[in-house]
Amino acid sequence: MMAMQLPRGTQDILPEDILVWKQIEKVSMETCEAYNFKEIRTPIFEHTEVFARGVGDTTDIVQKEMYTFKDRGDRSLTLRPEGTASVVRAFVEHKLYGSPAQPTKLFYTGPMFRYERPQAGRMRQFVQFGVEALGSASPQLDAEVMALLMDICRRLGLTHLKLVINSLGDTESRVAHREALMKHFEPELHTLCGDCQQRFEKNPLRILDCKKDHAHPLMATAPSVLDHLNEESSQYFAELKQTLDLLEIPYEVDANLVRGLDYYNHTAFELMSTAPGFGAITTLCGGGRYNGLVEQFGGPETPGIGFAFSIERLILALKTEGVALPTAQGLDAYVIALGKDAHMQAMKLLYDLRQAGVHADKDYLDKKMKAQFKAADRYHAKYAVILGEDELARSCAVVKHMQRGTQQEVALSELVPWLRQELEGEEHHE
Image: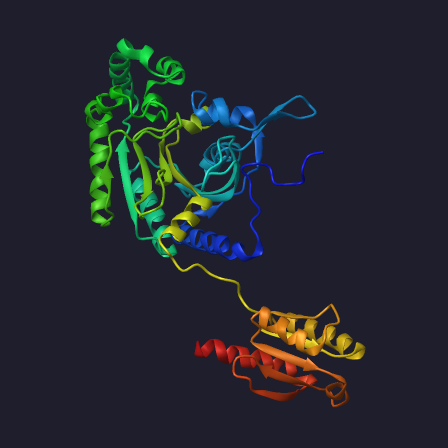
């Protein structure tokens, strides 16, 4: 019998950790909305062809990392390994390119699935947050997308960041670079790993992204893509850099930066953590421009740019930098009841408090008064509302301020508005 445990590479996010996740999601979404990006939600699984075509069949993701299965109708389905292909499929299927409001600016968040060796901040099921901007070929939009990414990270409190950019050029530039790469690698191809030998024919640019051969001498001397940019691509890259300079967003150019997906051209970028102790893999986020992807899905010629980061890696970076993360929020009120009648009255009071927007709870284990006070402490309740036989007889409750230790009697008929007012007064003073 299999142990009833988590599958390898997955995790349970427990209540004490969820506030950090909610904070990252909230800040990311609010920042996107400030930049006029709208949320989109796509299915967790798609037809396998969506990713084979959208991600590229020469990538490690498609060749080695996808969770693919047959459904009962013998159709091949795949759990999404990334978000861009699904968003572009939805963009084409729902004809979003027909909207007069262009570019179409979208963001998404949700679980992704890749079969790879689990390690810190890299899971087999992970949560990704990403954006896609479709419908404009402006390098200024590229700069906006990077500004959005930097804004999210800064608003979360990250400071040890490095933005690295590169240009992969347009189709003409990529063809010229491809030929130069093949000429460079061919004489010594037998010294590279089997994966690289396969990539040589299909997509030699992917050789530069190899994890096994990254220290191979041929990598250091490989032709730079920047030396093969035509005039149009050079101008595009120059305008991107000019815009980033104008926005005072620091960056470094790295001619060896190659995104792992086949659909990128022109701009490619990564955001790294430079925090001491973050680990060997410093990439927090990757992105770039893809100017042929919409056509592959049967849509009109539509340029696009996007990025995605895993929330798990962002949490690692926040912890490494010692950023103060949100902790468990306390209750506004904990109702302490003594006796059967009091417990019944406490249920009504609890319901009324919650209807008024007060975060409240009570004891359901018939504990003694001292144990109920301990529970109020454990939940960091601001107020304890005490109901016993004496209080019921007088139609009132004793309300104790847990921090100050002060207490007073309040009529049950007045208790909900009174407590609401007290809590609002405390918020105002904070």
